[in-house]
Image (cartoon, rainbow, N blue to C red):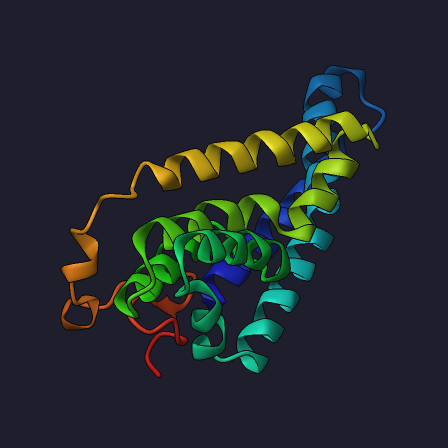
Length: 193
């Protein structure tokens, strides 16, 4: 991870150097425009990324997996509503959605409910909603359309797995653990612990 941090820092410093080295030179206007937009995108997205990491880490530290599972194991309607509410309350990045899904299915959460949580988590969490609001300069109709259409799509895809029983028979704990965003796919715990 220290190599990744070094690489990201190097890219940021190289971008800043390129921006200041070419500032005011008309021959480098197009390069300057690319560097300006790249840095603006990075600086606008960074606070939301940090906020998402902090919220997700706090929730994983203070809420047990069994607490979440009790709300998702009820009847299908209760589980799907709980999955949608959980998607809003518990920010899950898209790279952690698959390990969370596999962990829920291995704990006997129905496939459609786990699927809905997996699909709706990266779409409906408050950090994504805020970043969409700021990215589209406060146009509420775009934010509302994203929320409604995304929810409809997630529910539709989840309900298409209503009769599927293949994953419920799988025991993911006997498979080789996969690492996504530092989390073990079988337990949801930080990898290696």
